[in-house]
Image: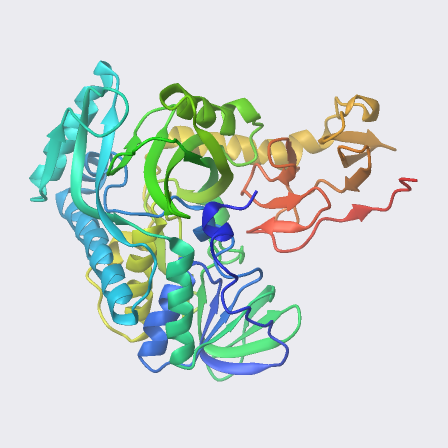
Length: 503
């Protein structure tokens, strides 16, 4: 099912695909919020910009977010102070607060109607043992000189033990915002191409790059990789530094008057709340059900737990929309923004925005724009792509390496434990046919779809996602539909498929 954002927005301008070779000052790969924000700033500075998008505008991560614009990234500042020091934490907070101002300035300047509204943001707990973490965060934020507040009462339909409140945060309709950015980019002669799959970036002569696509090429001096998960494996090797997390969202008509504010708790099960105006009604968005992309999941642990939460407090609630999203998360929880690699001059990246891409995308776009303009950015050091630090989160590093090893090597050579006959209709699994692993999906009517279940990114064995009916990569988060079509990066090629006689 489409997200509410996608369903309530017309396809932005119906841009055409790239059909002939062209040149630009800057080629931006990806038309989500980070890529388009880069294009906005650079086109307004007079750069000739070309944006290449393999799908439609904002259809992936940006179009599936909760769209909270906030510097309150869960309980994060106590962690930042302990891991990186007070100045680092203070600058991170300032950068994200500045991003809220920047977004509002763009909206006002370009007169973008995107349902922007200021809201207070809260991280709360309902459990006494977790109250100490909230209070530590309050102390940490106060030590940075930022005005936060500890509260024990909120507008939520249940009692809490305590919460930390950031005032003057915001929310908006992300696709309407992107539509406004597209208008502004086009008015400054920027070019946007959709249905254009980038397949390679290689150094050319005269200090420029050739960006190859499925149809034509772009030659440019500067390249920005804004593809959510970087698809260029070497150099950079971002696949060793990040993993993807999947989370779920439902839009609910509660039939009741709703509260103000944006809310999230910090420990499992995580629930996120905000409201949205839709067709004359105010709906409640509930998010959660997080798990590492590619891990087995079921309906009850994903959408089911959110629906149960809604019905608990609003028995007459009607579920209008269900959707999910993927977030790239670095092992130290800090994004990578800046030069892609020391051996690829004038190529830049922004990735690993965790679950807070609305502000971090603006932070990133300003950093990259300043890099291209040879200007110093006071926040660039926070997100250095070349940072080499001891991995503080050893458990996650270990889990990621174990999962990758299993999917790349161990599982490939183990016999499949599912037989073809045991696969139910509207479900899928990996079976073994003539000593070869085959991914089988049976439609509700019993039609069979067979694919080679090996990710086209780096060759990991895929797993079946019975919630979304997709083949997911447990190593790096690529996804494919049951017919083998690539849906999410870092892979961009489709799966090999097997022809079957379904008659």
